[in-house]
Image (cartoon, rainbow, N blue to C red; front, side):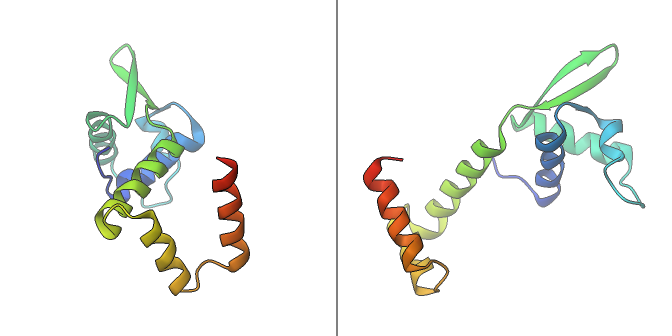
Length: 119
């Protein structure tokens, strides 16, 4: 799964939340000053090239829809971070969270329970 820029991730958020959209509709979700139509159109086409969006043609305009779910994106992003920063070690991730006190004993017990139950 190819990485997304912050702007691309922001645009994908609208598709995940709202469903299929035309580029013109995307503009409505931005406060003033809104990005230029061509700027959003370029981002959307880039997302389609990366495989995150697909389109349906309506005459000479396209309605775009998410081709990758938010859950698929989250899992792919997490795997990428674990690979890049923790040498593919999930234990390394959890150890890091424990050291930084970002995860409690109760949460660790719940995690162990989920692993034992195969969830």
